[in-house]
Image (cartoon, rainbow, N blue to C red):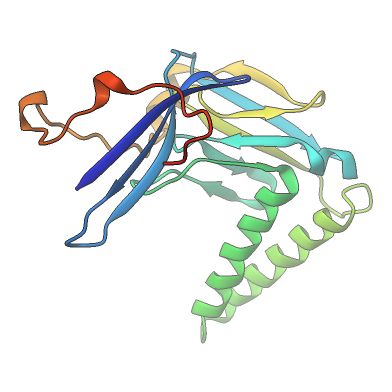
Length: 198
């Protein structure tokens, strides 16, 4: 596996490291953005009540769990979870895509198709106009590593409880190798990205 990493500094997060890994023999790949500063485990919440709430900036790290309790939705990180920056509407569109696929895969199971179709209707209503939607929702991100955020005046944040921490997944890939096992190590020469690309 060839692993590349590069340090940089970005607003809000501070020092970060971009990482990518590719295995030529099995085609496994991953990428992530790791925040190098230690942060408290955090839960961000944003009630979606207006069109402007849909524009709220959402930063979901690879260790963040997205929860919309009113819809019964929980998106947990897995071993190939990738971080992304979007807005609240973009998060709902991602969830909508997954539900749409699940409905297609549920051919013959009327109960699952019915539930999925209802979820799609509710998500569409919220995306079209939260003020007239029949359901009020709150978007939450719980991150045990503190690397996720919702940037909006309407968002609140709090430290996660020990019970919440126990139940959350981190989704991170941990590479357990000794420095002597690395064939080509340039980590001592790593610097800011500037205009370079990975």
